[in-house]
Length: 432
Image 1 (cartoon, one colour):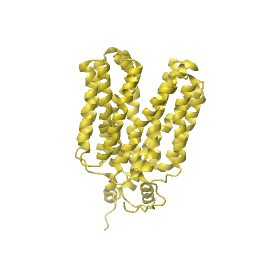
Image 2 (image 1 turned 45 degrees about the vertical axis):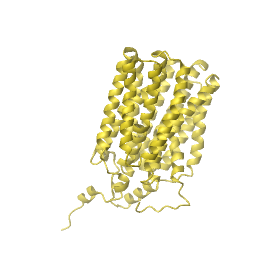
Image 3 (image 1 turned 120 degrees about the vertical axis):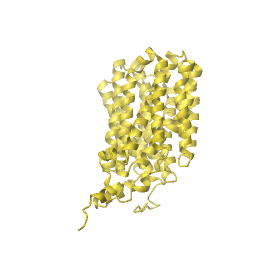
Image 4 (image 1 turned 135 degrees about the horizontal axis):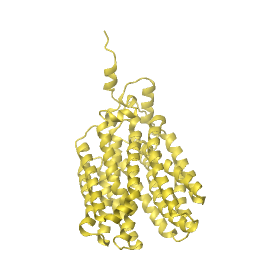
């Protein structure tokens, strides 16, 4: 890229940056899953009430949304590095309060700090990864960051299978898992330099160079051409598909036990078998996402996702249908959910709007998912078939919107953002 002078001795490998920065997704998943399990343990050991569990869970969820919105913007304004260091510090402090806190105020503060840190970290970290990559491997390293989310879930489930019966200590270990990982990643990130792409954009802006990346910095630019179409499409895609994915993630066990009559042990064993398959699908997608067949895999994944939620509607709720939902949604999500959303977001917006767009999209998607989660048990009690049919429909709509928008879209901001901004040129006075 023009104007970027990189030193091989000072710049870490893009894959190292992808792992260290991408661990934000691992910590995100580990914290969310651990919190759900640990709070139940705390209910029976330190006296956390069901009402307090609801308050603490909601605090974490909404803090993640707020963190994404604020952190994404701060990452564009002040740089990636200072934000992704502060975010991990918040997670470490908040996680420590969750480990040792036994009162509602301390636990609530811990939940808020962890949520803010997680939410703010992801858009900035993904931007760091994409800006360290080249056109040949950008999609792959961004997909890797999404894969680490699945690894975080799997690791937490495995740990919980060993410590779930340890009482209060088990809850502490679950919280300590992501807290210690966050501390280690914080130390590793000290060796990750600021994004060169962001630094160039900042210098161009300071010196009045009217490139796209230097001029397109205001949030209002997301609602103007050429960014409004991909922004609104990604907003709809992420929100609608996340309604189903989040419901599946949070309530699969609930549905298995209460509607299908499957034991927790049988469901957990099935989930542990499916997770590695989904991870392998994600690894395969890393190999093809930067090639010409990206949209074919997206279409196949979309069909799997919609089919997953239709199976219980047609065949009822039983062990086989629950396993089918886990399998199809797991593989489908690898090709047509969070990973491709991250890739499209990185490619669709210039440097000074990249993490702002990612943060805004994530904030809306998570808030809507949290609102649906609050009423999901009541909806499942009223009509589980109608609930799953609705999930299939909204998922299909979200997938279709993204298909229409990105199927033939060739504009990649990494290729054009160093060019002169035509809007700025048009605003120049015509010499007499």
